[in-house]
Length: 306
Ligand code: KIV
Image (cartoon, protein in one colour):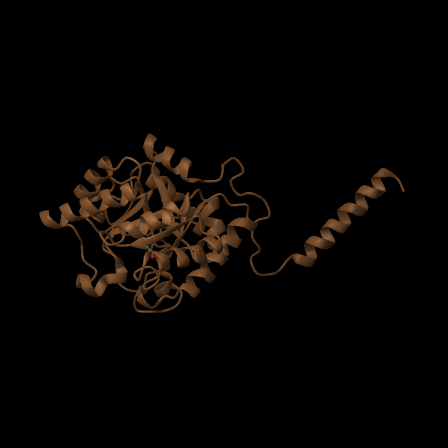
C-alpha cells in the first residue's frame, strides 16, 4: 500500500468514526471556540480586577448554552439556583435541591469540557445546604466541586463569614452574595432593593469586608444602590464585585441567561437589557453582552440601577 493509500484509508476511518458519533441534535463544537484564550483561573480573575478589566458573567444550565457563552467570550458561568424558576418552573429558588444543582453543574461542565471551553465555573449552593454548620457547608460544597465547579456561591453575610473561612481554608474558592438574596426573600419582605438606608448600607459594607477577610474572592451584589456598590468596589482590594441591579461601578456584571435573551415571560426586571433584540443569534446576543459589560455601556445607571 502506498503512503497516499494509507492516508486515504485513515481519513475514511476518521470520517466513519465521526459519523458514528454525530447526532442530529446540535452537537457541540469539536475545537476550542476561543483558541487564544487561556483558561480562566482565580489569579487571572484577580488580575482582571486589579487592572480594571470588567468581568462578564452569565448563568447557564446546560451543555450547549455553556459552550456558546464560552465561545462568545463570557469569562464566568454561574450555574445559578435561578434554574429553579427558569428550568424547573418553581416559584422561587427555595425549592432547589443539591441533587439538582449537581446535575445541572455536571451538564454545564461537560459542555465546557467537550467544547474545550475556558470559562470559570461557579456552582450555587441551594437553600438548606450550608446554613446548619460549617461542616455541612463544606460537605455540600464538595459535591458541586466534584461535579465540575471551580467555585461555590452562597448567600448572606454575618453568620456566613465563618462558613466561608472554613470552606476557603479547605481549598474551595467562594463567591459571596449580598444585597437581595433570593433564598431569604420571605425574610426580606419581597424582591426589593437592599442597602437603601444608611444603616442598611453600613451593614452591607461591614459584611462585605468580613467576607473578603474570610477569603471570599468574589461577591455578587444584587439590587443595591449604584453608589453603594461603586464605593464598596473601590474599598475591596481582593474580592471582585459582580453586580446585578447594582449599577456600572462594580468589577463585573451577571445576568440570568433567559432574561438577557428576552425569554422572561412576566415583567422584565428593571436591571435587565434584552440583548437578543438587536442580535441575529444567541451567540451574537452574548457577544454584545460581553462587549457592553467590557466597555461599560451596560448597565446604564439611569435605566438599570437605583
Ligand atoms: O441564581 C442565580 O442565577 C443568581 C444570580 C441572579 C446572581 O444567583
